[in-house]
Image (tube, rainbow, N blue to C red):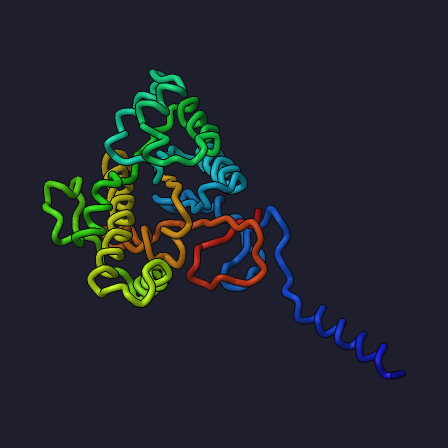
Length: 278
């Protein structure tokens, strides 16, 4: 019995030793090690494309996005890209930036509740910043109808005139394909057919390709502006989604920045260029 207190002390010390050290809030860290890294936003001028990931319903992520956008825009001309809106809404974005729409009119004309559905209060500060500073806003997505057609038929079987101008996506990387297969198996279980899986992957690639092409088109229209695009982090992680499609279009060096509310285990070297701990 006399050995019990020292034993407990040893176990407690072991637990403390094994407990991961989590990075401090408001810091940039390496996804490989979680060690601090130099502020990557200061390097944004060396990139034509900056991709910001988000969890759509987490307000901290939107604060991170606005702060990053403001800092980049203070040093160089930018255009802002948004996963949230399909390219058919581009006239609405143009009218908003030109000051021709109220907020209520913007929501109505963009069919916000139907097209996106997340609380617009997450995005208003960014939209207002763009309007107040006359920064172009770019709709990056395609319609749900197009994505659903691909999910049902496969990209190759959707007629060209129903693809909203999209070119054929670059094939999924093996890692991305495995990730999407794991996601899909969680929905359909072992009854999922290879055809269903292929169509599901095609649909995801359609989203990724649409955003990559919209970013590339914006750079062609106005090469003087860095494109800062916001989208779900799943389209960016490990450079499998939009960065992979951008690379196939000739833009391999997009800067990928992803925020994390809490992180105590490194997600891996290729996860992003840097992780911001909120």
